[in-house]
Image (cartoon, rainbow, N blue to C red; front, side, top):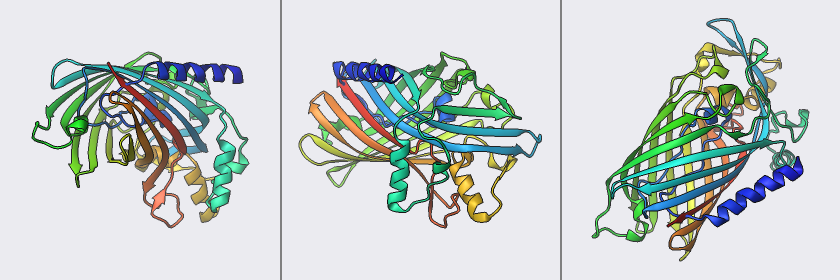
Length: 373
């Protein structure tokens, strides 16, 4: 298994380095396991710089939520959720300009789920900074498990599925572009306004855990501007009409999914930019119809149990932030590196602070390579 993983990683890196590219700037992919099944979109800059491009993203994230159960107050059914794996993602996207204002692209996201290597470093970091370990020491390290149950019956065909789940077709119309009199034409793809539509085509059934088995669509708006002569800012907002998900049959699923993202980029030197991103995604299921089944009896341990479970990632707004750098290899080739972690505003952890975590992913390391031709 270790040899197979190394082979796949080397293949992905070889593919990336043989095809480097520059187009629209695209942020890290959403990778909560349920959000992944629905192909929920990420943000991007409004424009593009060249007629054709190829983008690859390599992402490695750690996902961990304790086994937890919720009672459906409408039907009395018991829904259970458990995640403990690491995910290696390779996303490949090829696009081309149809006209000065319109572009099309196709994307193929492939995942490989594994036991991983980050469980111990993450637990050690929590100990080092004095943070809550959220029951991690009670679970074996480096496991590859995902389970979604209804009344004790497993809904997934495998606890460790990997592969290709969907194909993503995208069209983007750039209805405002900066003119020749505007500044920073060297970063024209970061400025302006655009709308885009995405169609997700299932390549696997829902029991694979990689798709809902149904076609789904998203619409997005993108806006970019330049602030204070050196700071670039852009934002995306997305709305997805989710199809029915057989894995969540009977759950109080929200039909519509929202996504809001902001992105700041600051040139540091001739070839280096600093990047800071924030994203919020709406709840996947309706908390008001579910009752958390606690195993702990005291408020303190119930708070920790809820925070360590999948409850926050399923029933509350999921936030994430990313810090990173972009290196301009040459005019039409870039390499971007990000560190991503989960967070959201509020006291859902019961720790009396203004942030809570949801563990999907706990942390992720992201590398993006782009090239134009």
